[in-house]
Length: 403
Image (tube, rainbow, N blue to C red):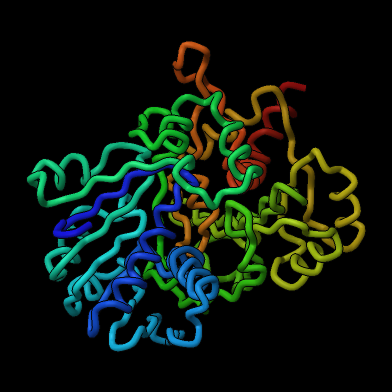
């Protein structure tokens, strides 16, 4: 990195981009006194469950917990006289704040070009960017064309470059080779085609957004150290935070390898407002019912995966009276997707797993590499939960009318 103003790290899943960058930043902060380093991502929940968690793990693994102090209320780490601060790019005031020596924008493809410019112009020495190349964006089309070769270092990495991955993690990545677009992006670290992405009709809204009309308490999470690919967390929340009318809850069951998911769906002025309420592995039925009884309206419509009839019956008998099985058919997946594509979808910023799914849910390809009208059966747990709920009355009406 010596002498380079920009470090641009493009890579696939499991490449260790964020982890290795944080290791560098900690080393830099310890070597040079009085430096200010900023780590930025699109939202605070994204930072807390991503880069900040990785930072704590590195500090613990290296035995630096006695010399590096964390200020949890200020969201920064103190290393001698240097600090590494974490803040989201969700307000103009934060982007136009104090200057820094080094900037790291984690998953920079989730920020717009103007936000990058506001941050970069206030950075003295170096800007580091990392991202999964889902599609071309401003790094390729606006930043790199303006740079000379001595100005930047471009890195491209894949899971093969990460020696820390276990054999199980590698196998989990490589079993997805059959989808050419997914594999191109996440397996090979190459720029993908946006044509394969299914959803482009959604946006992220902050939990304190004006759109929500009410303030949100900070989420408290359990099981934050889960080793799974997704951040499986049990969230507490105020279910009345979403605007408009409650349409109901969608539930997708899971256990060991897949999470149990609950999403809340509201409708307001013709748009859908969705919040991820639960996304957790190893969820026993009694624990699931306790969560629902505490946080949900058990009489409201709740549509669950019909592949688990015994679970649905058990929860219904326990008192979850609004719970019903999803109605499936040969075209139910595509039908549900079509219905979801008809509406503008607003997703709360703390729905991290749902956001990740929406960014990675794509159409499958045939042997010739052409997209076909069938989604890849990956990154779909929360999306399935939404689909069960939102397509339920429409699907049922079709069946009754044809009977």
